[in-house]
Length: 268
Ligand code: SAM
Image (cartoon, rainbow, N blue to C red; front, side):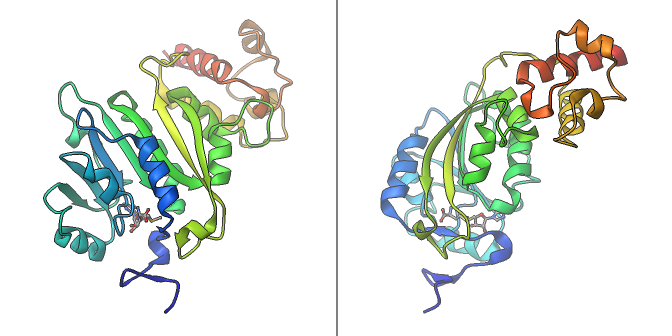
């Protein structure tokens, strides 16, 4: 049988379907998620239920968002899951997570994500950060390195700054290709993202932080002065005590927020 067929389902490449089959890894991920009834539990891309089943075992209700209609049909027929699942068929990138909110409860979101949508999906979820207690995602290992990078390292970039603005980032475990069917071409890793109750460096307008970071990292080899020429003067940099000759990867989250806040105040 082809290694693309698992539990009678042919994996669809366009949906990033690599199903987890390693029970040891599955147990460790479920332990990290720590499912409970005090949170709104939400899974993105349940697929053939490798994580869905053990997570649902210990709780009363689990909400899932799955794009693949065939997999949604299977979940609807599932012997014990069908009574516990609230199933939303559709694209998680377009999904309005605010419809799941309940007073006094935060969400715990998790998923073995299709790698082609993982970065935009995290950006989408950051919009709901204040309503989220934790997120656990299986990602390309390289993306976990970017999320958790420190200033000065090669992996430090726009995704790092935006993720660390909203969340504490904790790498949880590395997962080899053999843990999946079919095996992906890259190494994977699980990350825990814990949104801050109060961001340590509050930003007045998140759009400005997005604007400053995407402009700054446009040319990684250029200095901050060059990349942000149209936005800030030398005087602005010195007022903020930021060395304009730094490369974008040498600038801390706090410094990017300070730049974004200056931009907001200029525009007002
Ligand atoms: N959770 C399962 C596992 O661990 O074995 C499946 C993981 S597989 C890497 C990704 C899952 O996300 C698939 O079930 C796929 O159909 C689903 N998916 C792909 N794109 C999606 C999207 N835009 N929104 C929601 N689900 C999506």
